[in-house]
Structures are given as structure tokens and as C-alpha cells.
Image (cartoon, rainbow over the protein chains, first blue to last red):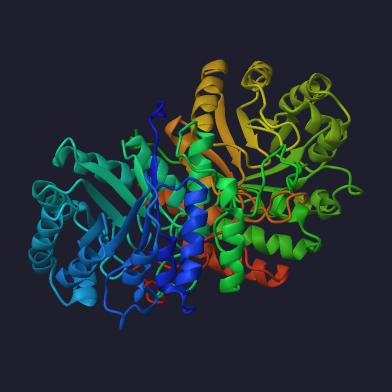
Length: 311
Length: 311
């Protein structure tokens, strides 16, 4: 049930999924500062931004320049999100070595985001994945709204599995299932991850992108772990989430996931305590408390512990 | 892994673990109002208060009177917490049909709370459990700090198992393992629940009292469910928690647990949506937002939905 497992890889998306929903535009230097903090704490895969139209997502307009400014540390994977061919060309121009490329499994979500049906989206994205792979880029091919859709409700798992099978056949190194609106539950995560795992190449990794909207983010992560998933997307401080859900929480928090896995005896290479100053800086810049827990809590025995005991 | 299970029983402790940490004293009428809301939403076991010294916990000083004021609905269990013989006599005087009676598995916690060692606590509490049972009261015998201690850190599982074995031998109908400070992780919950289950009478139920301090509350609940636990303590709005952890969250929220279980196809009998007005009233009375999620979020398709979709 909770067997000992090998290490888990965490992809931090603070700089992309986190910042893209914020009104405040972060400067390149601020982004580079957070990148340095993440690396210093041991995060080894970091999504720096997306190559989407700056008119729609101005927070990501400097992703090209960001990639030219970074110092690439051996052992760290610098990634970005791409949603069409134009974005891929921009990513290739600045030598992004790892890309997330995805479609939505929800007809409504797909039409709202891209004005395409799911099948049209697949037809457009398949050659983008192929071209990225042919250029030697590592591709993580994604499926948004894989566990449900804020507009439609339930999503047919067969659609998700069919897309995963296609992405696997194209040669993607990893399939990412995204709970875009935070609608998944642990049983569903376990079941769908197992079914997708069975449908894709044995050497194709499976990863989960989870939002904590309903407080099930960490429970869903653990269910994914039980189903054999070893790659999870997170964001420093639990930043992120949908601009259409004003009260919702964001991505599962990097520090909380690293802490939870560490408590369960699973290595991530991340020192969650080392992320605290970065979380505090993000909160100062954004002017609000972020939803992640471990940035605000210390452990028993730590010198600055706030932890007492209850009657 | 996530087999279909029978129904889960939720014990709401808003009126006890929730209110005991609040500076604001709730009136009897306010308490009766929340009790009515909980019952109307389908909560069938409710902990109304504790019989402890009013000098130490003034919020619970009217527990005796509260029990004389309630209308006992068939099918609803009205419970209270007792920590010594004097408390039991008060509970018996007002005909409390179900009691939680507990000790701590942590030497330091036990000494701070009761000025007794763990063994001294066991010696004092055992006859209290026996007398309650002999009076026909249903007893849920508890073990506080079962998963760790804010003062000591790790707690030896053998101590917990040994206390559980003793409580089971005394005839307690249920053993409650309490993560008093919110230190448990899912692997630990799964393992300890299995071991305690194996150590107690087959007809002795197992229940979990979880705090969400580190964001693992729901994940721990799911792990308990996987280990066969079918009774969970919760509090409306996620109120509760330790006065010594100013930033910590409280109990796992009744509405979040009912929602999570419902999403996983497990019946609780609770309509979590029906709890929303009570959550809003608690927040108005306390002057702050409570940590529970589902009191603030609606589901896709609901007319008042705040839920959009993310890019």
C-alpha cells in the first residue's frame, strides 16, 4: 500500500503556473532570483515560463529573454510550456531542453482556450510534439482537464487514455495528467493513473499536475504515488491557480510536497526548509499570504519552533 | 487500494475541539443553533463539549447545562469528552450516552496536561472507562499524541498499541487515535492503524482524530480509510487546533471530509452543501475565515458556482 519507493522528481512551476495568474508583473531579475532559490534548495526541474502570446499572458512575455539569461546548472532541467507551433519555434530559438506540450481533454475548455475541438487540438499539437522531439528536445506531452472540467464536469477517462496513447506513440518521454481546475479525488487519480500507465510505453514516465482547490491536492498526490507516479508538478508557496476561481488555492506547494514525501521516507533532493526565505519574499512582493503550509510552520525540535501541544 | 467501502461515520467536534480554543465564549443558544445545523445536514455523531475544569477551559463550562437543553433526536449520538473521574460523574448526571475518554501516549504531553506520566494516566483512566461502561455509556477510549508529540517528536508505536490493547480489553466500543498536533503522515497512519486494528478485539472500532496543521489531514484520512478506518473526527469549518500553534489549521473540516468521501463514492449521510450557512455564521461570529475549503467553493453545475476554468 505504502511500499518503499525510489526518489520522486518535483517540477516547480512557480515561475509559470504561479506567476501567470498574478496582476503584478515580475521582473527578469526577480524571476532569476526565485530560480536561484529553487536551485539552491535542490529543485532539479523548473518550468520557467510559457511561449504563449504576450497579449494574452503578459506575465510570460519575457520567457525568451529569461532563457538567454539563465546559467544552466548541470543536473537541473530548465523547462517551459508550449501550446502551438509558434511557441515551439520560440522555444527552439532559445534552446529550451525540455518542454511541456499539451491539449485539453474537455471540449468546452479546449474551445475556450484555443477555439478548437479536442480532436482539432490533437491534430495541431501532434506535429508540434514530433518536431520538438526531432530537434532533440525532451517532451512531456500533457492532457489538461484530465480529471474533470470546470465547465463540463466529468471527463470521459477513455478520451484521456486515448490521447495518452497517441502522445506515447509519438515518442514523448513523459505523459502529464493535469487536474487543471482541481476537481480530482484520490480514488479517481489512482484509477486513471493505473489505466494510463497500462496504455503507454513502458519507458514513458507519468506525471501529475495537481491543484489544491478543494483541499485534496496532497491526498491526490499520495494516490498518484500509490499508483506508481514518480513526477509531480508543484509551485513554491502553492502559488498558481485559476484567475476565474478567486478564492481557490493554487498548485500543490513545493515545500508541502517535499515535506510530505520526506515524512514518508521518500527522497526528493529538496530541502523544504531552505525554501522559506523565497516563500517569504514572494509573499512580500505579492502582498498576501500564500496557501502552502510548511513555509509558515517549523518542526518539533527546530530552534525557532512555533509548535506547542494541544490539550 | 481504493476498494468500495461501506459508509463512513463522521463525528463533528466543532462544539468541543473547535470552540475550546476560541477566546470568544459561545452562548448556549449559539451552541444549540450549531447543533441544529449539524443535525439538519445529516451529522449523526456530535461531540458537544467536555467535562473538564471550567477554570482551565471556560468555553466548556456549560457542557452540563447544554446536555439538559438538547432535544435528543433518534439516530443521533450526543457525545462528550471526559479526562478524569470527576468529569465522568458530571457526564453521568446529565445522561451523556457516549463518551470519549483518553490519555496521552507522550510523557511530556501527559505531564503538561495532567501532571502524570503515561503509565500513571493509564492507571487513573482505566477505572473511569470501566465505570462508564458499567453505567451503560458507550465508550470511545482514546490515545492522544498517537502519531507524534509537539514536545518530544516521535512517539513509540508500541506504546500506542499497548494502550489500545488495554482499552480494548476493558471493553471500549471504539479506539480513537488522535494526531493531536497534526504531525502524522499517510504512511504512518496506514501502518499504525493496521497494527492497532490487529491488536484490538475484532468488534472494537477504530477511529481517527486528525489535525490539518501541515496540510496532510485529508491525505491522512484517506490513508486511514485504506487501512479500514470507518470513523473520523472532524469540525465544521475546520475549526479547532492548538492555542500554542497560532498559525496552524484545526481539525479536518467536516464539509471537506464529507465532500472528499462523496467524490470517492463513499456515503456519510452528510450533505456538505447544507453546512454552508453554519460555516458562514461561525465565521461571522469569530470574525475570520475558517480553513475548510468546501464552505467557500461550489461545484460545477451549481447555480451559484464561482468555478471557471484555467488556461
